[in-house]
Image 1: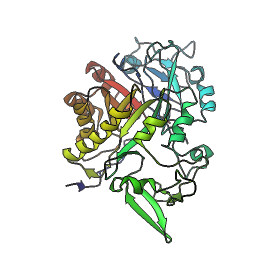
Image 2: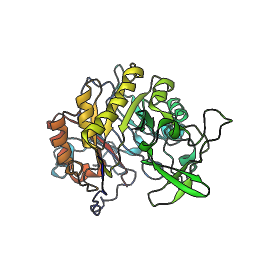
Image 3: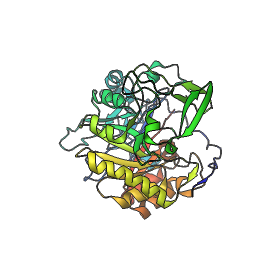
Image 4: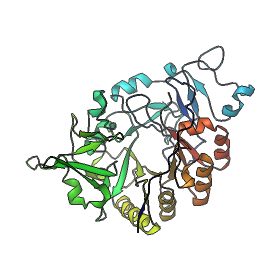
Length: 386
């Protein structure tokens, strides 16, 4: 039986020093057996999206780290840089190749950082770019029209993103009550009936009911109005410029260009304490679709749910599995989610391939970079640096 609870969230730690337009990426050399060696991050300011790169790790800062050329590396013999020097290089943001052109071409939905030759056979200067929820997330309360340009987590969004020079798309997978993996971010889905807002848990729906929301495959058929609630509780009509219907994981594997890799976040509600049997059933349903339809497509799994990540690694050995963590920026009842130290312990105990951390957690505790490297784990980062 499920037990619901509210995460015990404490006040956020003191903010980091201002790092305007700064991007940090920290990781070890990710194992060679993974064909896409990447790192995860969100775009700053209004448009939120992750990117993935394999490093030669870099630290991008608008001010030069030392005298001379703005791209001079951090001098490793300086005591003030000692903690970061073991994992970081420095480069001026304006000198990152193709950054401006990639952002303009992809309507600010993707970002690239030098990968140093990630993919097999790639040139040393090749960039890896990942589209967050495809062509970008929908933030309906934003005045930025790009946040309402294309329906997030849709086949159209993934394929539009694939027209640009990107390597992966990222999306959230949940499983319906009748066992079908679907692509949808929110824990709850909303509609309006007779002037009243109706809210249902996404995973309590059967597939047919889930697909009845929003635009329909048959144009003559009218779906239920699709609404979305913000974190502040405001409700918006979920309409964007380029619409598409809700989709299943199977449809994405079948209909999205096969050259695109998939970063599959295993999505679970933070407020529910799942049993191992419940998690295993969900993961089996996801893996069955992967086995039947993935082919040679590069895939990686990640999850904020510690036991889901552990079980996914136990159930299969073909794809890497990463543990997502806020790095201590929020505190939960499950201690494994509350720090990089606990994340390392969990990854080693569960045999996971690495950690995806909110980048502020890494900068608050940079010595963890060395510990993670010594533990033979990959470190990926995401989040906004302001």
